[in-house]
Length: 484
Image (cartoon, rainbow, N blue to C red; front, side, top):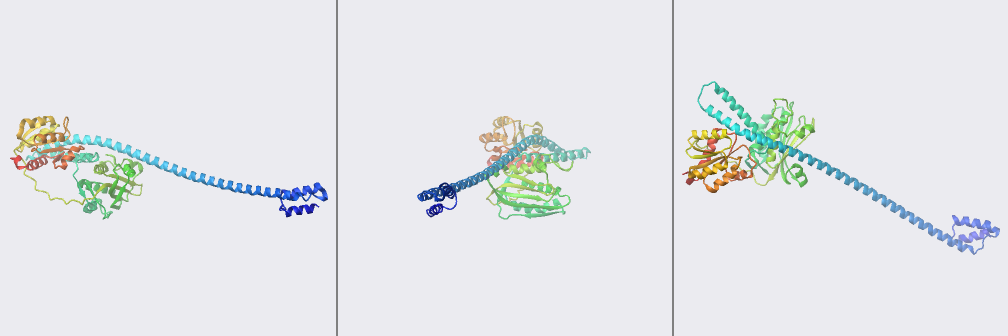
């Protein structure tokens, strides 16, 4: 009977394994040989189907749980990767910010040093102009006095000091520039012959010039000085020989990169000077553009070569970068704003005018020794000289002397009223009177405007001959009605 009940249950859909078989076995033992009634078979089958549905639901829930768990794990992994990328980007930005802050601190430090150097050089230029002027007056007199040799040495020392002040002014970005549109490739080719002689035969010199680059606007003489200073620096880094390469290219600077370089975004012409020398440590690179900093032996350098390069490039609206590793050479990259215009053709120099004259010249200079020297030089060469120690005194002289004043010779930086301010006042009252500026440096935009209008500037320190030639040129350039 039990076997028949079990067979009926199986025929109704009850499986042969699982809880229901164990139940049937228990029923058989409970009911004995007769077994459970046949009427229980459908019930057992229904119970079995219910449990099968429950098993399927558990399997579905388990699969859903597994899928949800896997999705959550994938989400966590993706989020972890995203967070790691965000942290890496944050670390990069923090590193960039630290680098920019370090560059800003270095720039501020260099600016402070530049202001100090420029101020010292300006005052020193006034003294040098007097020294150079008086020594030239002494040397111009025929004499077999043994002291003449000492005067000559004084003049040579003054010339060397003047060279140092020019380098200080270049570093401080306070020297006057005569910018023109230049082809850097052409400039490099023209300099190459001189550079080959300068660096010596033990160094292989190469040019790698990109023929497609645009032009730049810079002072030709100063840009030549930049390349020569870098070439000399490279030569000294290769005492046993090596390779020196000057190359050109172009690059676009975005806002972030331009801000790091301290320039405006845009297209730049890049001139690189690369050597295979001894290289530099990071500590040396951090100070390499400071004035008077040098790694050379005492007496082998002034420490102003790279400082001069830095000042010229910055004053030209560009930037300079150095990349170097000890034992693997160095590369200096000069970035200058690209301009679209073709390089201008230099005009042939005109003959120098005759020196001396009979006109009345107003001299405005706050340094007594220099003012007295200029008065003596002009007086000895036929001019009538009026003196003023500042702009206010000069204006009073112009109004008092009226038409007698034929020209104004004025310093740029003076107390009470600057040279450009004085020139503007003179133009309002006497537009026919030309102004000749004397200066060792300037960062005054008014002087830049005057230079663009063709106003002549005499650079300190100058010699009496320089003074007489410049003044004569200014006077001869007046309209005929004014000259009469």
